[in-house]
Length: 143
Image 1 (cartoon, rainbow, N blue to C red):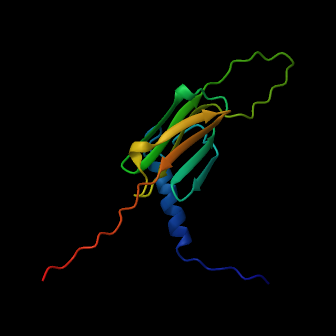
Image 2 (image 1 turned 180 degrees about the horizontal axis):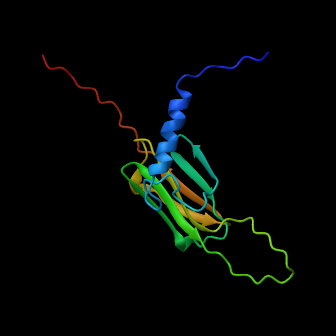
Image 3 (image 1 turned 90 degrees about the horizontal axis):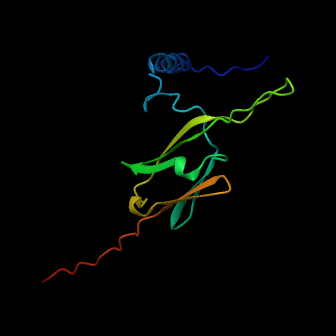
């Protein structure tokens, strides 16, 4: 006999997710399905910066939009589908094509004015420096 954990709120949570899916409008920023595919992303934090590495092979760097607004970093772009003729009767397409869209909430320590991005060998590298910490100031009490 196996034990089954009873979770009384699981059905309500599932119902809520299904309602969100039902009423989501496609092709809007608030939609659940925001893109045709999503690149794999690594996020690294050091003492001085955050680094986001996104795998986007086959995407021209000038077709990538990276911007930060209200503490949210957005990466979007599109990989164009290549038109190929089917010669042998067999065809298999595993790579995803179309638009992609990823958003990341950044902490208050991120310096939005100094963000840089570069693409090397199909990997987008976004560097977000951290703001310098404000040093505590000693205030002398006059007597």
